[in-house]
Length: 391
Ligand SMILES: *Cc1c(COP(=O)(O)O)cnc(C)c1O
Image (tube, rainbow, N blue to C red; front, side, top):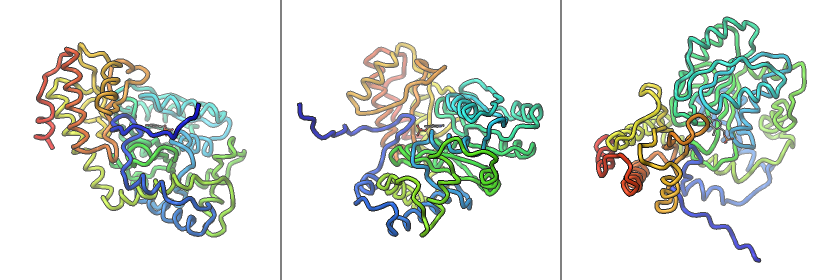
């Protein structure tokens, strides 16, 4: 059998990521591959640093894309800041806090868990109690935007509490970066990681990270070697931070970096505040449509993440059947529930390029058709007009 070229279908991506990648970014990915030590490439990477500093709203020198997806950014933060025997306070209110715990333990450190119900935000009172009870903790880690539930925690307050108790902070901003207000310097975040396939709308495979001076000092002064050769920032810094004297560490994913560069140029053109505002505005339009249909949100209104809308599956609708029909008949992907919320919710993403009125209208009319056919309990034929009226 001769295998032919793979031609993917054209989908509209309204799940938890990846999000729609624009034509501009797709074209950037197809530009000629050059050497990763080529002066032209080094120049592009210097621009990348400035563009990422803008996206994160920081002047941190140590700001760069890790050459692997968001999970590798997570691991970079934990592996570099923690040493065996350290203690970390980890907040969990969904899937990703659980992964943080795994990371802490794999560093040979101990995780003190602060748990909140799925769909709720991280409770600052519980965090303060944990900080008081554990004066020897080295850092506090939490997820800013919990993609598994659609809840957005108060990063500024949590970082303030950590610093009051002399703790460093690790913030998961995989889904928040470029979608929700996030100010690394103003909020004094020490270590932060993100992903490219959520609100930046570049393909998956890279993880922008940024470390404060204070965090960089902690990494330079470690007593033990980082337990990962690939993610050891002391080595990686010689590559991304070396300028013209760049030393070979690994081969950067050249074309994928063109894609991220282009998406960051687009973010700069739009303006980060405008990008935040667009995500919020489109969230309100989608909300109006869904609520008119009789579909309810999982998260309390004030805690909702505009780029990830978790809603209860209406009575009479079969989860898998609906998602399969949306994909087959409408080329539309929405997200299933994860973990404790599996089978109970849908996660509708409005991330980056996917956050548009065109996508909202497609999603609402497709859901209307599929749910009506199935005899689910919804108000038919009203959602799109309600969304338009709210936009
Ligand atoms: C998607 C996501 C990750 C993991 O990123 P990958 O690119 O899939 O490795 C981590 N944290 C959050 C909050 C996410 O949404």
